Length: 451
Ligand code: PLZ
Image (tube, rainbow, N blue to C red; front, side, top):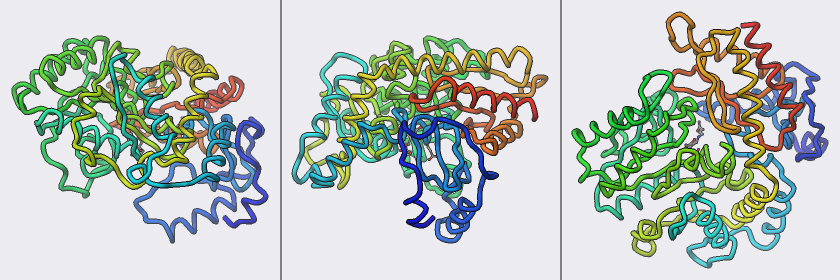
């Protein structure tokens, strides 16, 4: 795509026409041109889900270089929760960029980093004294949460769960469960990482307390609490399939951690910031984590991440032990303050709940006549549908892939997930309107009927 294409592209944000509009096949000629250049210039390992050249986005749509307008039910993987060009975020970015783009917070500190830390300390679950540190990506936040927990406890082992996703760096690959595409051939992985079963009600049939007891027994017998620095878990597992644990699972695991001096880390990178109809998903389960990792929705699309938690744990590191050149970049922090303002003043937590109710109702209805829908689950605007063979319960990845592909061809961006690749997830921007959301769901329903 040339500068010309961008010059003639519409400005993004909520003023973009909120409509699904297909003027070419997907991909159209201009998108094909970009994808051909991508194939030559970009490493093959970097894939893409939607074959378009994006030129603008906002509200609930993504516009491509050919003039197609797609309904966005993915938010760039739960990032543009306030929209892809929220006016307050855009303004804050421009203003901060004109002041200064970087000093390195470790060299000469600035206000916005501290203000983001203050906001995180206030917003994350629990009213104990908290501190925060800022980083660039979800994986980097997870890495640092583990560093902090190890330093605080003087122990090394870390427990992660089946179906977990925590990132693609070396330590976080070790924490992530799924081999393909995340880990295969990329080892050796970091040591002292142990995996135990999670709670997956549809597939394990266990109550929350039973699933917790199963995990805790394994931890005690195979690792030993005295060796364990941290347990890390996504309150609702994201990439692994939007798996909502059975009631009582998370509180039992968290209580066991507290009783054994183990740091309980909630990875809220995907589930945080209003996404689930609560500011943080931990709240839905009545759990107060020792440390919380955040990223994605935190800064309206800018790269920013954080670890927030109990002051005495966060302060475990010697001065200078935590940091990085770009962590808490001022432009990203300005965007975060604007996004947080939007979450708090624009009713977005409630909006996530309404969106979730609409999606749940729609697929629960469909489930009555389509037995391939094994489960409709999620919370707020983090919803998913799991597909399986009605007779055997076997995961149906082929159907899932076909439906997602058909939706994209019809101008609706949906993402899949799941250890078995048999889950379609819905993560619309909270700025999407009901009519557009319903139209998107109509397209998914039609694609399901046709496959
Ligand atoms: N923890 C819970 O969901 C990122 C992965 C996309 P980064 N999930 C999207 C992909 O295929 O790479 C994620 C997450 C949870 C950590 C991360 C990692 O966040 O910002 O991608 O590093």
